[in-house]
Image 1 (cartoon, protein in one colour):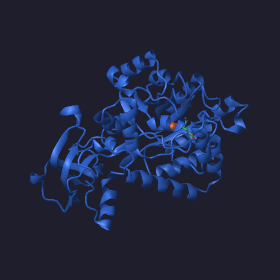
Image 2 (spheres, helix red, strand yellow; image 1 turned 45 degrees about the horizontal axis):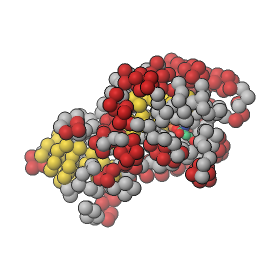
Image 3 (cartoon, rainbow, N blue to C red; image 1 turned 180 degrees about the horizontal axis):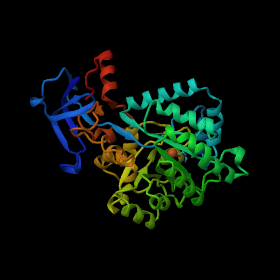
Image 4 (cartoon, rainbow, N blue to C red; image 1 turned 90 degrees about the vertical axis):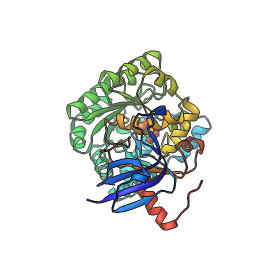
Length: 401
Ligand code: NIG
Ligand code: FE
């Protein structure tokens, strides 16, 4: 059994729900880790003897970010689509087909190499848990291999065969839904924990409420947990459907009416509203009012939605800064939504909070306080602790504050 003590933590944000803003902040703290689990938390001066001592030099330490929504298994590039959007082209999901073509054409090795690079990138930005969706294969074989490759990097994998109706089925939607709920689901389920649907009547490529309900019910019958892309492009049925079916999360929630907020608040123990402000940024869409949702009692999460179309960024610190600047959250509320909130959306209690018995997923900030996540937007101050330790050995970097 190996033991490590992390000491010299200027500000430790445990997120344990105690103290001001429920952040559970301790100063001059230490954390002892045994076999990747948190074994002890307390004052640095009282830290237990351990095999290895890591002194973080007064930096802040927070729970590793939980990015509960990403589409990282893809090939190809849609930079030109992004540029067109910045000059007024609206997003309707049609570009997904471009990525489907490129992803189908890529070899397994190429997809694995691209995914590994993206995972390495997000870890250097402080993310320690990543949910990964399929959805750029849209054939039985291509969906299965996307999930198999994703599974090599995360247990939080999501079957998204119902991302869009692929072009070859555009005139036969029902036939595609039959495949998704039949052979594709059967082949994909062993490699997925979740099923998701792009429920969006405002997109001609996505699925309406009846199709989405049918697909989600089939996924539940196959033993998968439910997630929904809902209310992204306009008011719609996604939120209500997610709550009706007891989904763990409904994601985007860009356009919400009062009834949507009411059902989300009533379902706060079951269904989390996952906000993706990077998407609003990259599609020039209005930001939802996150403060209103919190006030109403809705359970909130923040995630990147990293994908080649609506948000090609894996940066959770950037998402936190957008949520603070554009959605009305305080820095504390945004940090909790990006850690404990996202963990709740994955129905996980072993991550998202630094408490004894939880996974020792620590993120170190090259800053004296978590406030710097929003205060220093765009500056790479956050890093998963194990990645930071490796990098630090190479460069012996002093603190940057
Ligand atoms: O969450 N809206 C559906 N899916 C992704 C975008 C995928 C793409 O455009 O490639 C999203 O925004
Ligand atoms: Fe998405």
